[in-house]
Image 1 (spheres, rainbow, N blue to C red):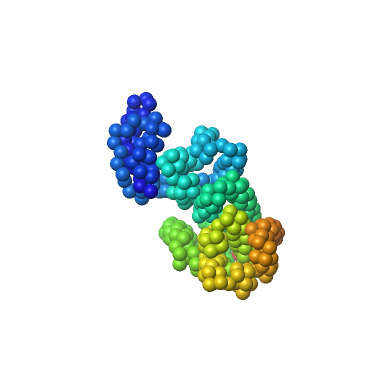
Image 2 (tube, one colour):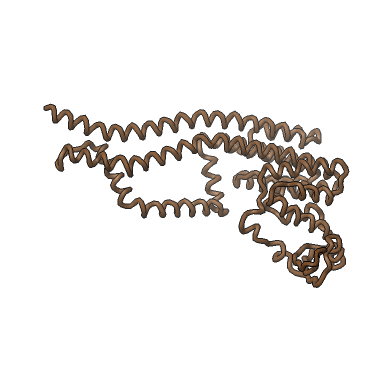
Length: 409
């Protein structure tokens, strides 16, 4: 669909300019008329230049999960009540408190007024609306069941948001403990140990023999005092480079393969991936999306490269005539119950309903696994902190006790 750059006067007589997509020039002029704009010039441009804005650079076009859930839920309710899509979008635009959502909805409204379908308008904002969202809306528009699809999307968004919140909540306390441990370690090494080392040398003299543990602590402290200012930028730069590398296809692939081999974390990652697969695939199937397209879209929504490749391979085998349940049954990434439930769904023609139950089951399993992991991490971190403080205390008290003994003798 071509894009148009325009310069026009508004109802206040001010000259304004902008861009939007439209089927053709008459449609573009009609769209300007709806917005009460008097055209001065109207030129066809390139969609890439028009669709790109500084929102992508600044990251302000990212809608918060809660805002997206609320947007979907409210839009579903209004469309179900028979409100036209443009009127519903305009109402949401006027009443939302999210600046990012307001800007994006404004762009969606302009594209829909210009002749785009709702799904095509959403697709122009991939950072806000992922492939699953867009494909479900497109299927809903094609089948005339957009209200039902929006309800499904709202439920799915709420489930995904709930899972993310639980994972973040479970990891908050361990991360706080790790941060406190690191700060405490550097605080002791930079401010406490040097003073205690000076006191010990003053008491014992230059030839005083200190225990190996004390010498090790003093050496670490001395190293940090001498090279800490140079070491800090190097560590920060290394972390930034590592994070950027992990965002590359190669880095993500290596990281996801490694994560799936860790003994404690692997079961949680597997359950999260299976839950996402089941809920996303069931939603797409329920929306009337073809199996192959649903598999490919779901593959990119699972969030793990290993599972993504497994589902893409499964799609190829399904394309060659195999059933999805038989393909999944041979893959060790998926528990046997998934293949069994898929087989039941294929036999009864209720794959979406069956997979919703699978998703509910594994989401509950994720909750239990996260609670269990939290109960393990917390005491482990406390032991680590206690051990660190104990080592430092032992490195200090050992030589003090030795000096006291030598003074008595």
